[in-house]
Each structure stands twice: as structure tokens, then as C-alpha cells.
Amino acid sequence: MNRSIAAGGACPDDLSTRALESRVLLAIIRLSSHEGTLSIIDREVLDTLGRIVDGRHRREATIDAINRLNVAVLARTRRRLAIDNAPSLLLSDDERGVLDSLDSLRQDPRTPGDELLNGQIEPARQSEFRQAALGVIGAIDRRTSLPAKTMLSSAARVQKPRPPVQDIDALELGEVTTLLMIRLWVRGIGMNFSGGAAVRLMGDHVAEPVLAEVVCAIMDGTARSLRRPFDVRCFCCSELSPDEACVLDAIAALAGGRLADYGHRLLAWLPAEEADRLMLSAGAASYPLHVSGARLPCRQWDIATLVARQPLFAPPTGAEGHVVH
Image 1: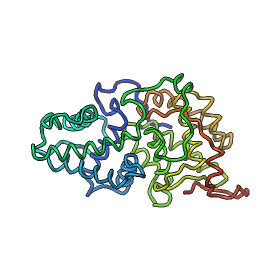
Image 2 (image 1 turned 90 degrees about the vertical axis):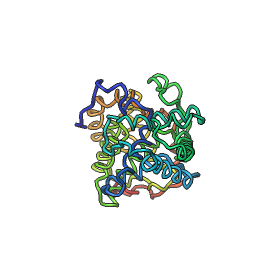
Image 3 (image 1 turned 90 degrees about the horizontal axis):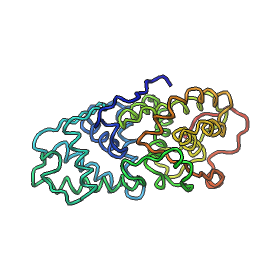
């Protein structure tokens, strides 16, 4: 894990200071602003970000709201807004206006139209923007069970574990983001692109580079050392596999500052030598993950139930396995 980790020095209002839901939405708008010229990896990241927002039960309505919001921001304003698709922490005034407008509508859906997007919406277009924005806000807020900028201490994470879940729609926003990073890494194998590069790019877009590095380190170690099939589902699957739950559990322990628990959880599927290797590189990531807006909770996973519900694979036979989905 050799990418630099910034300790302090962030601008008072750069992207990393915003709530994760705001970062995800801005990343979608940034990428959509250049959708016609995106690389394969950019497109994969955009698709993954969209899946963070659109829950399985209301996906069509959410996708429609996202598309209408993109049109309203990128093509329905008095002038072309300065929306940069590069994964930059720096916010332009227009990008700050987009995020502030979404926050205002989240607090008060009746926010006057001339106060939205720094006054750049024509009166005839204000209702269009408001309806699209509220649709997207409602969708992503269903993923968010904590207030926008609330963060739990390590003690609170340990003392108030979340109940077990079996469906992605029951996960918190940070968990969904992490899970889809895992699935994106594996998707690269079948679709012939670098899953690691895509995960890192996604981490940069949502200002979670350390989380992306942790996911890549774990998945690299798993692919390198595991001698059985590793159950990672495709994007469309609404259920979590036991292996996916184990990875989420390990990363949540690291984010909570519980390094010993992190190492113990890695041993649930990794050989001791590989778990030790990951442990040695984990210390620098624990604090940034702890203060991160991803807010990974401690959850009481019921792995036995996940295994019994829908096993994808027969018991290991000793043959060498691979990371698969």
C-alpha cells in the first residue's frame, strides 16, 4: 500500500470534507459531463457509482432521476457550468453550488429556485431541477442511516454493532461503496480491464483513496494466495456472499481501529502468511479510514446463515481456486 496518505492539509471545503453521498453524486455528474469520450475504465466507474445510488427495488425511477439531474445541471443552465470530470479534490464554484443546492433541498425541499445552482437555473427550468434532485436525494438517502456529517468513534462502533443483513439494500452507504469496489475489482477479470486501476480511480472520484487501496490490497492478496473459489457476486446480485461479508467485516474492523480484530478476520479466508503481510501494511490506513466519510460500521454478520442460504460452490476439494463471480 504505497500511495501517499495525506494527513491534514485539506482545504476547508474540498471534496473530502463533504458527506459521502455528496461525493458520489458529484462524481456521477463529473463523469457524465464527458460521457461521450470516457475510457472503458471511466465507464465502469460511472456504472459502479450509479449502482451505489439506485437501489434494486426502485432502480428504473432512480436512473431516470439521475439522468434528469445530469441534463438539468449540464444542459439547462444559463451558462455552461464548470464541472470537471477529473477526480480532483478541488471544487469549482459551480461544483460547490451543485453540492450546496442538493444539501439545501435535502434540508428544505421548498428552497427557492433562485437560490439553487448559484442562480444559474432559468425560472422555467427550476421545477425540472428540483424534481430530479429530490428523486436522487431520496434514493441515496435510503442508503444513509447516519446524519450527513456524523462520524462514530471507535468505541461507539464496537458498542453499537449493526444487526446482520442478507440484502445489499439493507447495507449502509459506506458498506455499499466498499462492496461495489470489491465487485468492480473482480469484474475487471471477466471484462478484460484492470479492476485495481478502476477501484483506485473510483476511490479518487469519491475522495476515498485509502479505502480503495485497502480493497485492492485485500483482493490482490486473495487472488495471490487463496486455494479455493472466492465467492464475489456480479453487480446485479442483490444478495451478499459469505466471502463478501467477511471482507466487509475485516475492513470495518480496520476502520474502527481494531487492528487485532482485522488480522483475526483476515484469517477467516486467507493463509496466515498473507494475513500477516496485509497486517504489516494496514497500520497507516487505520486512522484515515476511521475519520473517513465512508463510515463503515461494525456489523454482527451471520456468516452461517449466508452460507446455508445460497452456496454457489461445493466444499473445497483441494484444487487451486480463483477469485470468481
